[in-house]
Image (cartoon, rainbow, N blue to C red; front, side, top):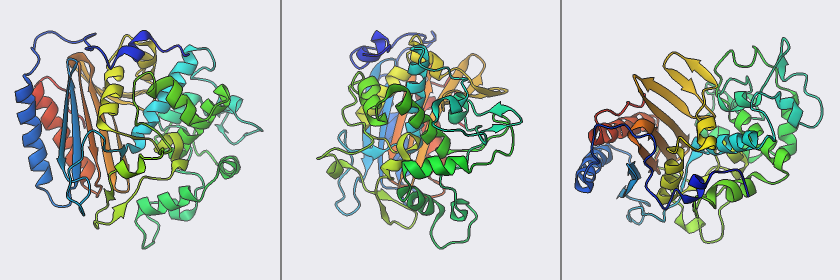
Length: 380
């Protein structure tokens, strides 16, 4: 099927133990229950919060927790069947697919992206330096935040609609043909790799490259190469019949109900998932002996102790790392955080987003991880 190692198919069935540091015994389940419940209670005491699903993977032991309300109108809590959009965590799936393609010699991560585009794109180079495939997932391609890139896509554009709503509406009106046309209009202002510029358009382009390389839609590639081997039965871009009713309504800072973002965000942020599925994914990401994972976590940009792999952000402290990606779209926030040397991972899914949500969730995450193991590296 693919070059995914046997660990990928088996990871949901066995304890992940490779690479764990000695020096601490696994925490008792009751201790983890107390740590998570206390941190979650403090988080939910803050105004505006809604539902919260937290998953802990600690030395192969899984702990699933659900707090708050899935739907404020009904008051029911979320559960293991609740589906959440995971927003930009989607980009790490694209990174894994790119790593697989590189290991299968279908592409090289340092290839000029234009090798995989139809037509000519002289604009996708600056002073002879081309946009390379790995630039698409370390946010140093120079591509804009989204395509198309009208004036209202700027955060400081004066409009009554919030910035996230404007972005959602622009993408919902877009098309693949329009994306290609707009890509021709991009003007790079510096050599690729020189500047940080967060770009959903770049991650979308990486998805389109994968589709051309394999001759299959990205949804099919995700299903055949990641979600089916990992038994992630509810992880999709396009919701299947019966899944829609299990999606948690999202809430913005005004308490307005939001739904999942447009599927046209594709690999940049359109994947939806559940807590059990995301714990399967996190378990795979902890397997540092898997060639796909090793390549996905290989730095493509580094600045001191901070580095970026194939969209994974990484921070080293002494001999330990924290590896993470978060996601935020109107109504939803999500985290996937790895402590590889401690063989620990944390997944947080929330159906509420306001300007303070990601900061509060970072505080929650660090409190849980360091409560479980004081050696945890704090997520910035």
